[in-house]
Image (cartoon, rainbow, N blue to C red):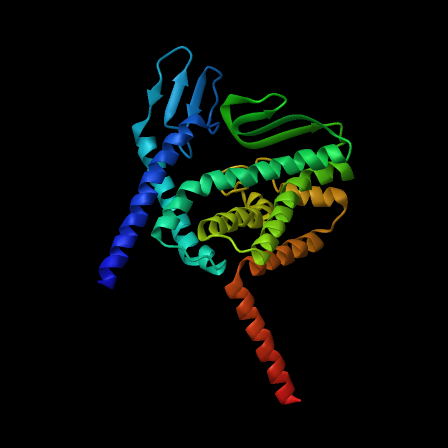
Length: 295
């Protein structure tokens, strides 16, 4: 019976990854793919392979082979992501969920990520204007927030333009660092609220997942662009390791900045994970007892 239930669980996980992967592949049909040769009147859409090609002087072309390959790519990515969340990330954060809650989180995963994306871009805007700059543009995915609220036909994970700051200055560095620094601060605040306050299971899990995006934002944005990946592996981060550049402009040495990131990330994981806190506490107690016995 247990083996049958495990197989059913695995099938549901695979089915969820297939459905979400297909939808994700279709969704990339709105994202311009600029790889390869570029012709002004020809636009290619889809990721990682362009499967939709529009031509101002001809018909729209659908490359079905690329669509199938993109779908397979996103199914694999999402299956790995869902498995990682269920087997590693959620247990390490002390999140115990049943299948219904997991499916709910799979649905809310992108909206929660976009909320933290908004926090990130707002951080750039707030810190940039606080040090003397002037906000002239802000956008999240297809939603242009400033200077006027409307839907844009082109996709951008997040974009903020702040004028009036000299490049390579301390002020510009604070503006660059402000995005990931703000999500990091938001994660600390969420963690402290969760530590001190009791919520229902659904609310608590949603807040922990929201905090998880904030925890990963800073280290991901520093590490992945330096090895040729995006901020979120496949999306964002076109300007390189943004927080690291900002820290350098402020005058923070790289080793010190890396140490700050490591300590902050470890501290956040401890704050969010009751299991890990108890494990660390037990190890410290055992160490002290061993030292006392040795003395």
